[in-house]
Structure formats: structure tokens, C-alpha cells
Amino acid sequence: MVVDDEERIRTFITRSLASEGHRVVTVSDGASALDRLANEDVDLVLLDLAMPRGNGLSVLAAMRQREDNTPVIVLSGVTDIAARVQALDHGAVDVVAKPFSIVELLARTRRHLGARRAPRTEERFLTAGGIRLDLDRRAAQVADRVESLTEREFALLAHLMRRRGDVCRREELLHDVWGLDFDPGTNVVEVCVRRLRNKLQPDLPIETIRRVGYCFYGE
Image 1 (cartoon, rainbow, N blue to C red):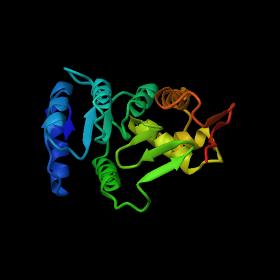
Image 2: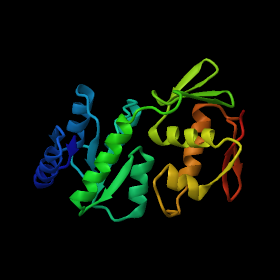
Image 3: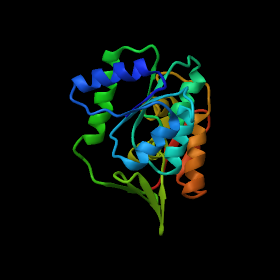
Image 4: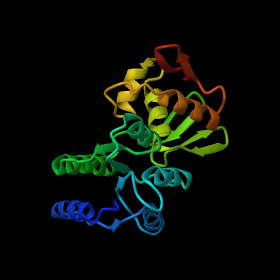
């Protein structure tokens, strides 16, 4: 699904995706995007940030609230790095700056559709430290409670659990979880860890290594 208030951009992207065999639906505002997502199966969303009737960030927030895990690539004409990081922190799997190269956009689309459809090469559950992480449902079970996680919360917890016992540096987490090759100077990692602790348990077995990173120490 392509969500953009500029008709020429919707048409251009639709033609390019259709030429690669994709079926594309388009909408021009955030409210319409949420309506379509509620009533149709969508594999991937290409989402503009600046739109009427619900901007891109509000769409991402609403998707997270309704536990809609459809992957979203944000198309942003905003040059401010903080805004792009905010989109990632709201659950976007990728950010592509406008004006974009259609070749690059198609490559990123293939990448995220491929990741969604890739055959599983590992067990469905990760279990450690009293947590059972469901890799299919993107949910964590603690005792008798099951909590749904946002894409970023899930990716961070899965990364730390797979590396349990190792200290994961902040730069590593920004790269592997947020897809950033630089430190944006924000506290996105710390905020995500805090949300995990609030959702799961205050004594979540993630140790903060001051000025370095985090370590999952549960067996």
C-alpha cells in the first residue's frame, strides 16, 4: 500500500511496483490508510510522513496501539535526523529520504517483503531469563502473562536474548536494531529498554552497562 498525498508520487511508485509484479493499493491520507489496513491484508506499507488527516507518525502510533505489525517503510522529505529516528522508534522498519531513487526504493521493498516471507531457519520461541519470546506473534510471555511488543521492542529483546551473556554495545544496537550507521544523539535505545521493563517486569534480566550498552544475563 502506497500512502502519499501527492498523486504523481503515488502513480510513479505504483507503476514501478506493478512492473515488478506487485499488486498495489493507494490512499492519500493517514485516516484512509488506517481504514484500509483494518479491512485488507497488506504485506508492506510505503508511508509519507507529511500528510493531511493523520500524518505518518500518527499512523505508526495507531498501528502500534492496535498491534498491527505490517512492516512500514517511511518516505520522508524531512531532512531533520531526529524526525527520521522518531519514525524508526515509532515502528517503521526503514526510512527513505525524498527525493528518492526508485531503484533504491524497489530494492528496499524487496528486502522487507523477502524478510517477511523468508522460510524459518530457527525455532519459533526464544526462552531465557524467565521470558518466552514468540518470534511469529512478536509477543513475550512472562509467567502467565503475554505481552505484545512493538517491532522495535521485539527486535531489541530478540537481539539481546540471542546474545545473552554478551555485552551489546550501544553502537551495535543502533546498527542491528534501528538500522543506523551513526549515533543520532538521542536516547532511543534507553527508551526502548525502559518500555520493555515496564511491559514485562521491573527486574527484567537486562543489565545496563553504563556508557557502554546492555547485557541480557538470564539463563
